[in-house]
Amino acid sequence: MKRIADKLFGDDYQWSVLGAGRHQLPLVTQAALMGGHVRVGLEDSLSLGAGRLATSNAEQVSKIRGILESLGLEVATPDEARRMLALKGRQHVLLP
Image (tube, rainbow, N blue to C red; front, side, top):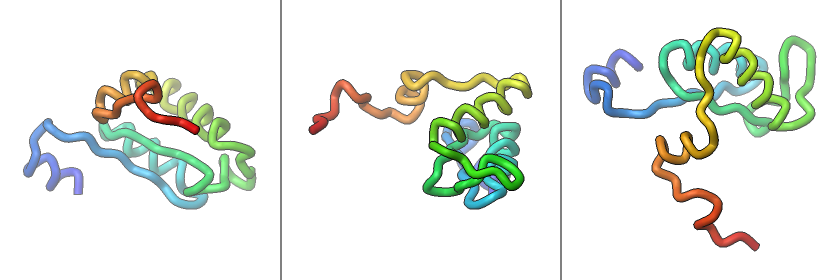
């Protein structure tokens, strides 16, 4: 699918992968190695690795961040991610 997207869009697109279940971390790691963005969270997987349940989304984010940084990949800051995805940011959202 990435090869087809490259043919259709060239370099002018953003893509990401989420992995459901126990394969979440290996799948998103491979996506990052291919140049994509990643997304993790308890809504997709309760696992933090073989036989280990995650206690929070933050724990999963910390885990994938450590994996990606150990592979020499740079992790975007929240502000950088908002710019890449053209999001307006928390300060422009009405919160209860």
